[in-house]
Amino acid sequence: AESAKAQTGAGHNLDHPVLGWVERIQLMPELLVFDAKLTPGSEGNVLHGDDIKEFRKDKEKWVRFSVADALGNEKMLERRVIDKSTFRTTSGKTERRYIIESAICMEKVYLVLEFALADRSDYEQKVRIGRESLAGNFLVDPARTRTASPDCGRSKRKSK
Image (cartoon, rainbow, N blue to C red; front, side):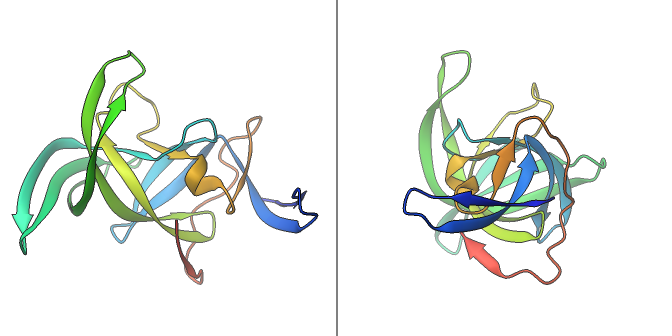
């Protein structure tokens, strides 16, 4: 991905990678690879999960769910539940979703993000990254796709 200098309202230069509207990401630490839809028009992040089951671990709520990445790797994952929230779907229905925290690698940037777990089986991209996670980290060029590969070998960790 190339880099772009953006001018902020305060006159500061920001140097951010320019990514396309669909980019490869890696879910960490499992190293699962997904095509993610980068959507500055949406606020939060969503991760597809199948067979989502709540359980208790160390007196905390956790979820166990299965995923299949873009390379066909299937894995059962466990994440601690951060919250549970109500969302309105594109069809207008409301549904409760678990909010989890997971690390991803996008381009050369390692991020720890919150994701809503949802059934995205009807979507081509099983991961959506929203503006809260893109802001301050990346610029999105909607005319481009797959401009970068995840490579976090020497990156610093960021939390968002």
